[in-house]
Length: 280
Image (tube, rainbow, N blue to C red; front, side, top):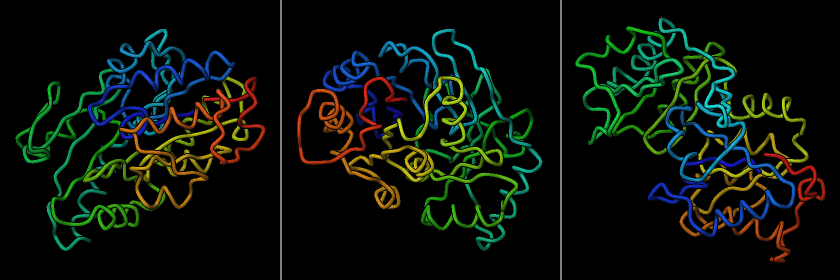
């Protein structure tokens, strides 16, 4: 089982419910693996992993990082060329008619600090860094840049950045009001493929859960894709199933059906539900 974190495994208060913890334990006890596949950097994942006792590999940073949570060590990571990132931002703003985007970057591993321009968010969260001028964002190595516009639709900003970036970068929509520019070829699917090669499982043995367009590669890679009830319409379109929302323990509902035999009439391929091979 490959699960996204925010909007999927985590409730809106950023906790994992007692029911979901029990369902994960049920699946693992039956021989399955749980693999987190998230847009968060490894540094941002650590508090969550500690809280739920997560061990083993995790795919972080939208697929840019393969992280060993047990050893607290980043095994692989991808950096984004700063000159290219800055050029994509400038050209995207020009293509949007001179619209001024608010920006943030995630600095290079292992620190992975979140650094924002002054108006990026209404409230600066603990641990965030701020810069007075956007030029300061490019002062050191980065893994990704994040774009936000308070009036233009996310889909417009994402489509424009994707067209401008072409094959030079990957662009994804990770949450409402947030577009991410990443190293070329970086997706949750590419990161999960790396984990799969290390752990010895394949797409047909994987059930994946997500809620946003950045989870489209994840769900299409997996043999069975589950969109949460709170999912973006684009993700619902590619999912095999739409589960209850994250605040209604949608992940647990599906896992209970797969591993506790609770029949709700939804068919899942045999390879995905075989306890010895279910991956993620």
